[in-house]
Image (cartoon, rainbow, N blue to C red; front, side, top):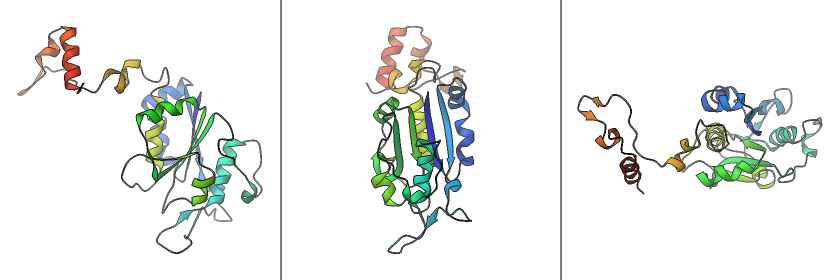
Length: 225
């Protein structure tokens, strides 16, 4: 079973999506499972502080290294009690079947080949940044890789975590109803359904012909092959 551990300040913002539709059904089949880790639980002091002002000045707040390291340690070592976050040491890829991913605008842009590459792991840990980002020591010494989902900026890593979770999960046997449902297997071409006519808009005649050879040729052509 593949487990997605998502470290976030807002678990409630993504909980419903993970337990709905395709992902929810896959979880019920015990193909995948989700572990939403609330970063606030590992905050410092009475007020569970997780961020601070950046050294050198500048706008906004930065997520501190201690809560993030403590959260990751709780995943990798669930039996051990965390006494002092500064004493925790995490070596990259402590477990061969675990991958720690930080979402960052400076990361490598996520592609379909990355979805299949991540299938070899049993545990994938996503670090969802917020505010002005994450202390660079997390990227340099804790995360195995940094990933970006595109050339644009979001307020946090929660949406990227959902995107990558779904992209990876779809390749696991049993998640989709049919293997052919994978876009890169069937190809990307226009699809139509009933009614045959909607005002002046009609379904291409070839799709109504019953000639599977011609339909396949049309689909390859429309899909840009």
